[in-house]
Length: 222
Image (tube, rainbow, N blue to C red; front, side, top):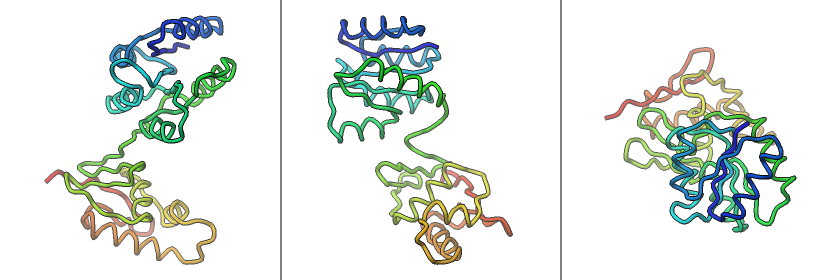
């Protein structure tokens, strides 16, 4: 297993690399955000251990650019900044875990092992299909350059469609995704909200598959 450590404090970088090597990992070190970004794109890593406070690009921006460039290696952010706002910012940038300094190296290794078990798979921070985009963290959607105002339920349904583009989603699945167990209505409410989405996105964006459910069709650029 191969790790990338992006850490500008030389002593911390040495200690982390030594510890991981003793645990049986191959470990590379980058001392700046730009070097870390280049290294992560040049080789395949099982986990990237990424410090937030770097001298050029901060860890948030490095993580965001990795995801934008299609690098889906699990990212564990390591930082002395332990505020809730920073944790949210890191996770919304595409990080998979967040550990605050000072930390137990044993716990750090356990978190790395958990990320390795999870593996690399696409988990973009911005969901896209054609010229339709959704930022789930900011609860914003765009059709081309125009922002689309959507309710919470509409956003929830659109997120499910964008995570499964081209797949037929049944009314039951849509209902289970956007409404909790206390909901006492019928599946007709799904039809109503799909109709709301069509009015805002265009009637051709969500296709009715007779007897099965609905399917997202990527809207073509204007």
